[in-house]
Image (tube, rainbow, N blue to C red):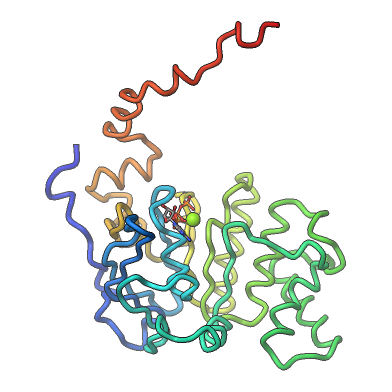
Length: 293
Ligand SMILES: Nc1ncnc2c1ncn2[C@@H]1O[C@H](COP(=O)(O)OP(=O)(O)OP(=O)(O)O)[C@@H](O)[C@H]1O
Ligand SMILES: [Mg+2]
């Protein structure tokens, strides 16, 4: 049962509500609603991301985490509302100007796609050649070596992505994401699909990059171990709203039953009731005779 007082929606904490358009907030979204047809994914969200901090966005699959961070860089445009980068409104800019804004960002997408036909080194060079004035081969190679060292993959520049493990590919994607010395890095599920040790290597890298580069970090995850380890602040999205917003202790002790169920990986009574009522599992089961000749 969700208690009535638990159902309130948190409106951002003291570190930056949507009104907080000051120097400390690098990304601000105001009254953001994003719908696809009738599907209202984000429902009037206001949020400010503080410069130099690590903000983690958690929430169940399909709740709109990826949609939220795509709105940050206007890869998706808000249906209603505004997005600001460093106090400049960007959601209404044309693609040409957005491309320049996006060079201030590094993003590690959920699929983490590398170009398979390019070597690791060429993958990392790609954004540099596209968006900077660096053209000299030696300088490019020097930057590639430095970026690979940052993710612990020295000497991998001539490998092709197909020869790498999932964890190594994520790290190359990360080296590419930091190629242009971004001010903000957006990570979408950086540890998904990795074993616990490799996941923890990614966590350590997120922390290290944050310490060494001092950039602003936003991590989308449903890996609570990762969230607690890297976060200065954790935001939980649910049903289109922010239902929790605070540091790790705030989230651990949050009174909302949806938050507690999520962080402990428990199915809620309401979800169980739906499963029980559906009866879909037994109907979909094979019987031994289905395999007999
Ligand atoms: N381009 C799109 N067109 C239509 N619907 C979309 C589009 N992108 C996302 N959606 C819908 O928006 C909702 C939220 O999707 P989103 O990818 O943000 O979820 P998520 O929280 O990132 O989930 P996961 O944890 O599985 O990655 C889903 O219902 C999805 O189907
Ligand atoms: Mg997602």
